[in-house]
Image 1 (cartoon, rainbow, N blue to C red):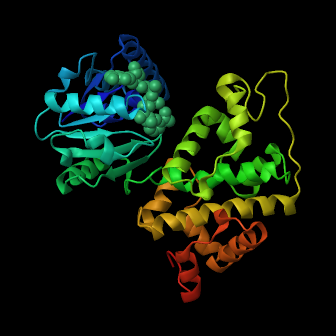
Image 2: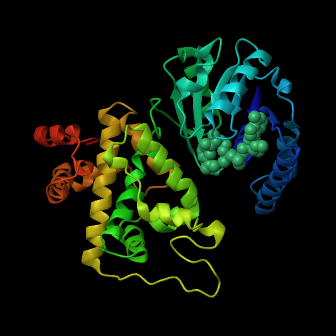
Length: 385
Ligand code: NAI
C-alpha cells in the first residue's frame, strides 16, 4: 500500500520509518529539499544503528530504504491510499495544504493530520469530501513510542475510521480512539503533571529537585515533571499549556504558570538551550533533593490525585474509553501504571477525600472532584475490578 507523508521534520520522518518498516511504500514530501536530505541521512543513521545491534538485517535495511521515495512535489501523492500531514502547526497553512491535496489524490484517499492541538473538524472543513479526514496522532519519537491517538472528526465516515484503525494495528502500534477535543487524551490528561508540580513549587512547598525526586522515587515515574519539561522544552510545553487552556474556554484547571512562562521568556528552554529549570553546563552540579519521605508522599499524592481526576473527566465526558485512557498514558508518556487502574488500587474514596481537602483548602475550582468520581464512590464501584 502506498502512503504519502507531508513534512519531513521530526514527526514526518519518524512516521515514514514506521510505515516503511511495516511494508508500506512511502512517498515523503517536504517543501524544503534540505529537510528531505536531512531525513534521508538520519534514517540511514538510525537503520545502521539497528543493523549494528542486530535488530535488522542488511537486506531489511535495504528494503526499508528502498520503500521510501523523497520529493518536494505533492503531486507525487497521486497513488497514495492515505496521506498523513505533519507540517507546521498553523491552521491556515494546513487549510491550504488539505485543499491542494484533495486536487491531487484519488477520491478514496484518506487525508490525515498528525496535529497535536488543532481540531480535526476544522482542518477537514476545507475539503470537498470531508468524510475522508481523520486525526492520526503519533508520539515523539514515532518509531519508538507505541501509542497512536486516532481522532475521527464530526465529518469522518465510518469507513475512514475502520481503514485507519486497521492500518495502525498492522503497523503494530497501540491505537486508541479519541474524541476531537483539545489535547486529545494524553495532552489533556497529563496537564496536572506539569501544572500541579509548578504550583507546588510556586507555593514554596518544595524545590524542583525535591518535586522530581518525589515523583520518580516515590511515584515510580520515569522522569520528574521539571526534568521532563526541560526535556520537552519549556517553550513547547508552555505553548501547549496555553493553547489547551484557551481551547477549554479558560477552565482554571488548565491555567498556565508564570514560573514556566518566565523561564520561557528568559530563553531557559531546557536541555536544548543548556538551561531550563536546571542548568546543563558541564561544570554545574544538579541540585540535590530534600529526601523527606513525608513531604515526598504529600507531593506525589497531590499530583497523582489531580492526574486521576483528569483521567476520570476524560471518561466522564466520553473523550475515550477507560481502557483507552489507561493505554494512552502508559504507551504515550510511559506512566508506570494506568491512572484509572491506579485509582482502583489506591481506593476511589481516598482520591475523592484528597481532592475534597484541596478544594476546601484552596476554594479553587481547579480542585473540584469529578462528578463520576463522586458517583462511583457513592455506588462503591471501580473502574476495572
Ligand atoms: P518540524 O518543524 O520538525 O517539521 C515540519 C516540516 O514541515 C518541516 O520540514 C517543514 O519544512 C515542513 N513544511 C512546513 N510547511 C510545509 C508545507 N506547506 N508543505 C510541505 N512541507 C512543509 O515539526 P514536527 O515537530 O515534526 O511537527 C509536525 C506536526 O506534528 C505538527 O502538526 C505538530 O504539532 C505535530 N506533532 C509534533 C510532535 C512533536 O513532539 N514534535 C508530536 C506529535 C505531533
